[in-house]
Image (cartoon, rainbow, N blue to C red; front, side, top):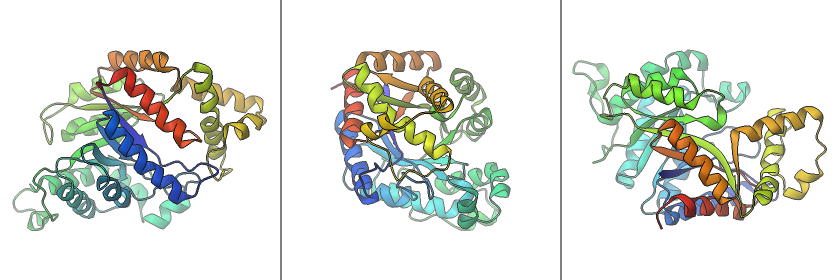
Length: 332
């Protein structure tokens, strides 16, 4: 099984944003040593506790400090940007880091309505135009706009020897079918969706038409926390769960609370129910339990790869979680 890392660049309650971003570099370096296939960093805007609004800035910083692991965006929120500029950025990255760059593409706003308005005009119209924007972006990456097209007169320079690998990220059948139609790889965010992963990935594979890829390629993205014991994993996960609940209510916690702070939080009945629901979507346990659950998902969905997002208060707990999982599932 191939495993990869999705980093949301979480800021802990005792950290600065700079410290959190330096931990992202350390995570990518650790992932490379542990045998993870790729490291993606997410794009979020003005979200308390998340430090990266610009993957295109972090990726060269991380790429220069690693040598083998694939690096990419998880994702470029395309409705905010012109396809040409996105192609230029990722072609430049692919020139600097040959055969290592992925361009994950998404359609979410990545922030509040106010942030969306500050970032771009006519966001909803741009979401509706997403299929056309994606098509233009892929033509720029492949440098193959149809002859006679106005866009065929320009090139997204520099043109790398190996183009960035395009992935569409999504949580619905709509995104799965768009990826299949455009002939690109598809990453399904199970940790953000209640949809049936097996059904969606099956739909993508059955509808796939060769394009940038000659055959379908998939990632299943899951949220997981692994520790030496089940009890430790449950305890560590509480920080992330409390933080997620507070963020969803717009309470804007400054960062992921410590385990002690999380334990001292008085939960309402509604919050307890919400935590139970969130736990159902996460994989939390000791190394054998997490391994078995990941293998079960892999067998159910027949995905090519599983991408893991892990948020903890302690950077050491986060790195240890990835380490324990790799020891169970990756070749040394």
